[in-house]
Length: 278
Image (cartoon, rainbow, N blue to C red; front, side, top):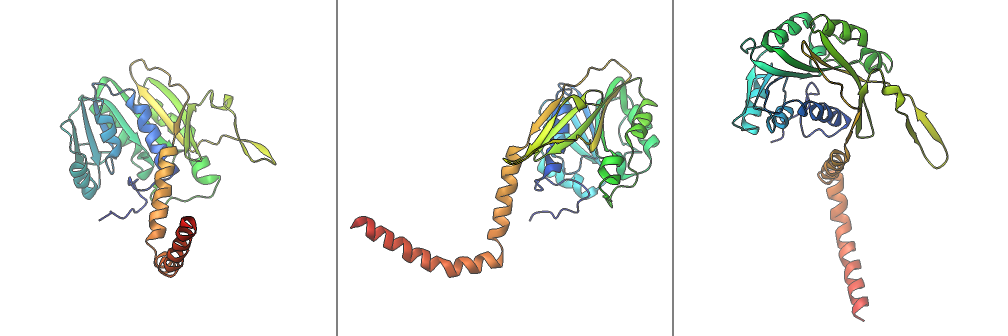
């Protein structure tokens, strides 16, 4: 039986722009994790941790939801991957044991931000790396009047930047935005150099890039800049369309319509066959 999504965490049968955005973040993180010990804070359904486990030495997914942890351990059974119950501000991991911490769309779900950063610093090795994302309150909520009931404390970009800079010597910041099942990530200093257009055969428009998400790569050791990247979400879009068609086929209206139409289709088909034979 398919688990019903509450909207609080991404379930990987929910195919949307949100799916693309999450996959793009994990794609970026995947370039860093080769032979590393990785901690995924708020691992949720577990798909992201599983992706990282294909290259990492070991991946530990931590989530506050007991049922999600249980399901993830059953669904993603790998020798170098495990899921445990824990809080972002009280991580059940030994100090100085993690090479890379990833935490995507987590920090806005609570208000213990400093406590979370202290815990991340505690579990990271001295040259460890943090890759974190957070919705930009200006564009995610304020500008469009959105109110995500699961978000406790969203941050504006400058707030996010100040928080992270208080704990790490080296930081690099990026913006993320999705367009029609394609996700775009670029450095905050260069993202406006990219131009995005939309329109039809009558009118073409230049779109203003309004970053929905802030991303940071942070460490006390030297870090390198990410290149501007795009995640092609056409495969997820196809899966969404198949899912929609399946849902339509499962409705009572469709079944009744099919029951009424099928005899006429059968008769029409037989007439065509006879006509071809003659």
